[in-house]
Image 1 (cartoon, rainbow, N blue to C red):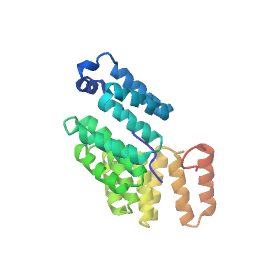
Image 2 (cartoon, rainbow, N blue to C red):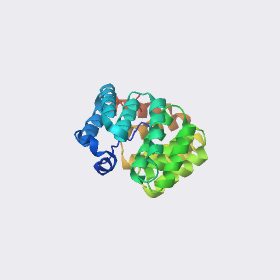
Image 3 (spheres, rainbow, N blue to C red):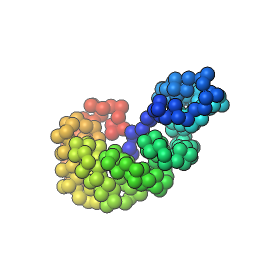
Image 4 (cartoon, one colour):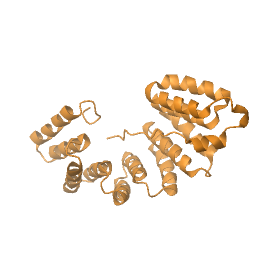
Length: 239
């Protein structure tokens, strides 16, 4: 089960103020950035063209960020990841909050590009900056699962849950990891936790169906999967 969430956070106005030269004052860079990032969500090809034109007019790092996010949305993961990683390097460590967002996106892009090794390196660097963010532990856990390092993934998920016990996504991935370790009863308990928090969570129902199939309850598995299709027909779980 690949992690579908992507962080598309923008760069703050405070950052824009510090980075643009006075000679570019005739361009409203805040407006350009907000418009470009909005386009990445709806029309990424147009966002790329707009971002490129803006970059040629002095858009600098914010324009480069929008270009990379547009490529990410266009599923050009390798190129997007490489650009985001270069951007993080160019930012340096002075702007920690912004650097964290870029590193998160770069790590997710490398993961989607099929390079979990690169994703792991960036996610580890990011956790050194912000160890208190449970979502970051989940991100690295998913990468470790892709690398088939399930014990290490379980440790990261324990960290995430320790920081936010109600983080349903962490419990779902913990269930998947426990299943891979043949700890089916423990995996089922994790699914039950999620379904107590959100009774119709499609990922939890999908996983419960898989566990029921493993245990020979084919009717129960089929029931769970049909419920997923009924409740969330367009979800990745239904697929």
